[in-house]
Amino acid sequence: MAPTSMASTSITKSLFTFEPSDIRLKVNYNGEPVTAHVSSSAMSFASPVWKKFIFPPWKPIAAQNPTTTYDSTPAAKKIIVLHYMKKNKNVLPVEEVDFSDDNGEALLILLRIAHLQFHDTPATLPYQTLLQVAVLCDQYQCINLVRPWLSQWVADEETSSKKFGQENWIFIAWVFGRERVYEALARDQVLHLKPIDNSVYRTSYPLTHMQEINDPMPPGTIDHLLEIRKMMMNDQLERVHATVDKCVETREFFCASKNFNARADDCNAMALGSFLQELQKLGVLPRSKNQKIHESMSVSEFAQNLMSMNTKGVHPQCGKAPLERADSLGFSMPDPVLDAHRRHMKRQSEGGMMK
Image (cartoon, rainbow, N blue to C red; front, side, top):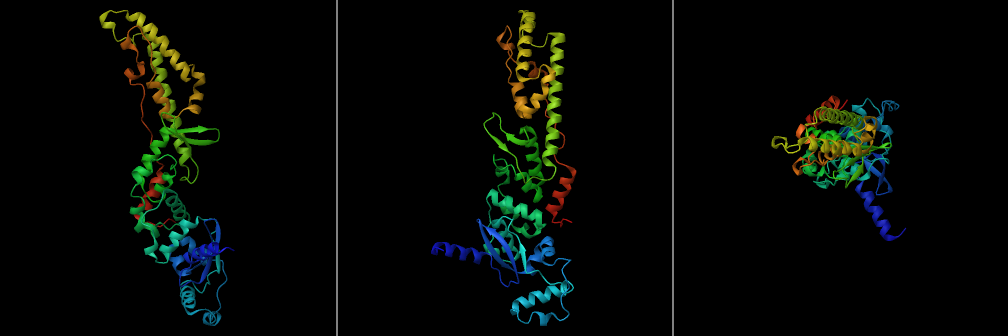
């Protein structure tokens, strides 16, 4: 092994060595396997899930004379083990736990806090690291461990959560109980989601960005948002069709110059034909093709396309589509936040331990 590589490995090992320690963890850090040395006591206090890993209920009971069993161990290790044997009815800790599937950087942050190494805990976290910390806090039910740092870590949530490529902020908000941020992101995603094949994308308007949404996401979130999206698209289509029916029936919806007796009938007829032609281009007409709209546009894109249609009448001032005058488009959105998620975020924000 080259000297530089040996030095790097040595530094990495030292990062994951916490004293006093009595058990080992298998860790993956920057693509390299590392053996961490940690305190079973600190780990167990930090997370109820870690406690079950380290002191599994199914593990055999220790010998009646634990001091004899551990006479050969270092003094610090013996104190930790005896303490937890007393607390856990003589159940011995396991020797090693495998954490190699977890993000090493996020795990290191949690281990430092658990072992009271607060001076090494970062005051700010980049998006990807914050996301991975949220994943582990959810997985190991240890939000209380990081609570003193949360206000600093999410200080830029108003801007960071809206950036393209950072769609999993909705998961961060869910884990850390940021209900207001979660709801704002849910509403935004309803308006900008576009399902394509078996994937879901967040889009911008004009369509200059499109980002696939992947896990981690709060359970049931995407399905719920897509259902609301479908309801809103159908609502908009119904409003448009109602306007079309009214226009065809009255033919007095387009011309703004009828009070001046300036060829209003000709203008209405010309504008109506132009209006119907534009709707055909969008796929609104005939109605049998409406499903394609669900598959090709986001709610926001569809609404913007409708509002920007330019119908042509005899008079220049009659070029606006009747949808604008009829106020045919509405953005009345059902609650994008599931009740179960509101309850979850309330518990997380109040510091309640998840059961």
